[in-house]
Amino acid sequence: MHTKLTLTSLLAIGLTLLLCLLWGAPLLWAISTALRPEEQTVAGLQWLPDPIVFDAFVRVLTMGDLPVFFLNSVVTSLAVTVLTLLITVLAAYSFSQLHFRGAKTLFWCCMFGIIFPFEALVIPLFRQIYHLGLADSLGGIILPQVVSPMVLFVLKRFFDQIPKDFREAAILDGAQEWQILLRVYLPLSRNIIYAMGIITFMGAWNNFLWPFLVVSSTENMTIPIGLTQLNDTYGVRYAQNMASALIGGLPVAVLYVVFQKRVASGFLAATGLKG
Image 1 (tube, rainbow, N blue to C red):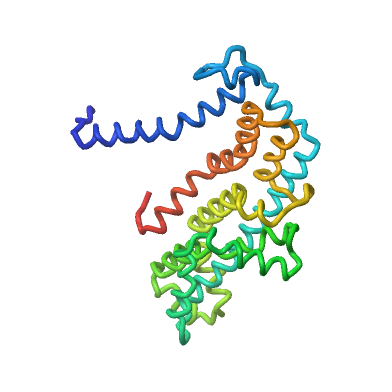
Image 2 (image 1 turned 90 degrees about the vertical axis):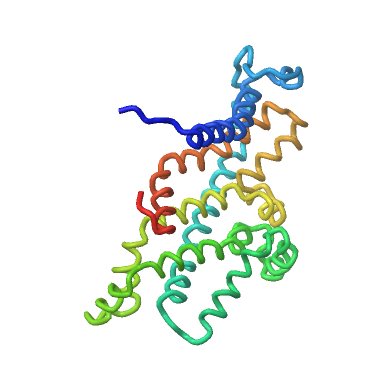
């Protein structure tokens, strides 16, 4: 059976290919640069490395502090993800299902966090972290990231879509609020929670600005911050910089590829569509 291509379909395919080119070209250029000898990186436009060498990757992977950076990124990203989901799930359920006085006002106060970019809040956040004695520590990296207004908004919207009959039936059976959340709402929202968790983990892993501001000692640096120290030690080496960027982004890329179906299912569930 042949599918007839309409003008709209052709335009959609052309736009998709254009976006793939715009997003894929920098990645291909980074891979190409990382596989060249260092002296060829400033020789001009050259997409295919000749010869192909892995010296830049070897230098990055043999850094003595790389395992420390990697471990710090894993610890902080997991902590941010777990705490964010724990707080936002409880808050979203409360705002959605527990009708207490001032709930709407409090919810929209939380939503104001979406309006202000994180960069506008770094100075007051840094002052708070400093006075709490958490500067230059993993706790100082984790704490300001554990509340996400966007995750709260998405989860509340999903909980609002769950039929009230499920909650009422559970109440008639004598279930407590925590039992309703654990046995009714969490199983129904599994995909959207997985999606929010993966997005949160990726954001925490790739976060550069806040760890850069709050951490100064090498033993507390995460991958994005630690790999920038290569320039301080060796000067600007473009092949090495591209190799470090690829190594730093590889874990989250693998994570997304492995769980992309759950991410897609979660967002489809959040919009009320079926995949």
